[in-house]
Image (cartoon, rainbow, N blue to C red; front, top):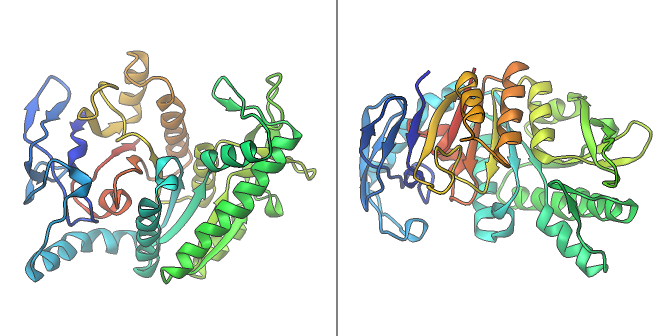
Length: 347
């Protein structure tokens, strides 16, 4: 598969309503699209679908559309709504999108919309910034080792309280206020997520996911509820373990045989040049991902995210996506438009 590199300027301020990316410059295996104040939205297959002008402020721009424009937008989304109706989409939610209240409100609106049209969203969340706030309030210094939160007994209590109660129930409440139905769960509940404590020294109650019992989540989704799952696992003996939210979401997606796994992150997607947010890959195969890792293009914190996606694909998930949660309505833009906004990884 040829990888396509696209500009994050294709991300809009409102689902399908505002989008932009530039013209292509073909290279030997990737195409780069420049960022312009007036841009053409292009399909993943290369066909032009619409044109709109955006201010250089990007997310601050507001574009008024006629009734015809809005109907056209719905027409573009229709094939995707039909395709994904009744399908399960697992979304991992975290990072900056959780700290910005306006972004949080848009994510919640997107989830409710998906549920309303018959798609089954499952939300899996972390909450690192909120955990740090409460650790500081309680006089506990946040500590990390090799990118993992050192989780002693006191820290584990805070992690479980913050993720399983404050963050989880806040998201459930927001979904309900937006007109949806949601049920909050902790991965520890009913041993839904089982994990074993990592053997690495001096990191405490940090776990590796070993299995997921998806029956409770699946049953709730089938009844029209949006399951909201906190990334706290059980060791099977009553001990809570802190697990990576990306990994938890990936294993839940695999257990549910979900149509898609979507990781909402603080970057535009997989980048050809980590210092150039314009150089985003639109689509990647597993083979191409492995090549990019070998070349050092996929590196650092992106490696475990890509590994999570590849593992999901190997377990039957149809497609995985890495998108920028900082961009308003990026979830709907990736799911319901021809162009998409992040990186889609398929087998």
